[in-house]
Length: 477
Image (cartoon, rainbow, N blue to C red):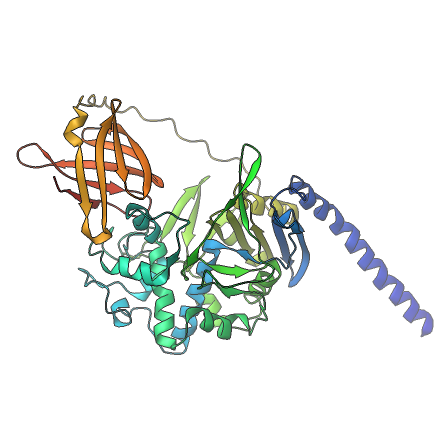
């Protein structure tokens, strides 16, 4: 018996040594992936969960360049839009308790919202099918900078003044951060707790995510947090983030804690198997068509609830990225293959999605189908477009105001160019792209279209950017 025990113990040790040796090449490849990060750069924190265990967790580069504090798996990062799946999950928990219904009109809980032509439901908010104009898109047109102090109270006041939508609720998919601000507000009003307190009590504490919180106070001190940086000509500089708004963003967490979150999808501690199944289902429009983000390399990316799903090289992956003020994040779950990849970065140039897929290749290369990307079709011949009418730029000069945004742009000609000015923003040079149509960048790329009255005079302009369609500014002089 003693000899059998010794042989078994030796065999056990040998298996674990062999396993460690086999994993070493992958760890070295991951090290190589982040080899540019050192004690003079920002960096990234990594965790990999395989077959129910954390098989790798490491930090690269620095969490704070001023005080020379390195990144580690315990470093706390702002994860931007990766926050959205937690907001959706909180809504699912309330629905499971019977406290809300997905087809409830959001005005049942936030009655100060405008009465829209068709009600916006909780389900619409979760699926990005509400038609609500994006809050960041609106704030920039209202003259806000993205490093201003921005609170939920301010956003709600702004949203409640917007009577027009991008489209009729339920008829299209268009990514909208606004919807997730409203979801967090619904959780707050239904539960009687702040959104931060609710998620802490019902998600983070049960999962022992002890270094995770929704950051709803921009002045709050959080120990062991990373600060974010961008690089200009090889020289790092700070990126400032002063959000005090939660729901679509502002989750502070670590790679270690997110490993606990992804394991909850395998063995639920928070929620149950039925909730997880429903949470992982594709969102649909009201015509029963799926909500589609995009088609990339011939593969369709569908929206779920705060996350996306696609077939990547033959394997299904649930994922989402995040990007705010120099923070970048990626959380991907190859659920059928029991592999999850977590990347949190404070480097503005970090390509989080690409890095996530690179790491997936290390673990799942033998399972991926390595087919050729379909070739793009040759462009079809199009009829010649009419030449753009040469205009007198002075026709467009004037002051244009949007009362709901408390915002006004002044247009003037400077050195033969049409320039938009705003009291709180940098001047924007507009480039003509069509008759009475120009483009430029008001923080985000945008298109400016002018409308003439019956006398042929310019009477108004409308601005469309990534998240807000046809925001109207009327000429006041």
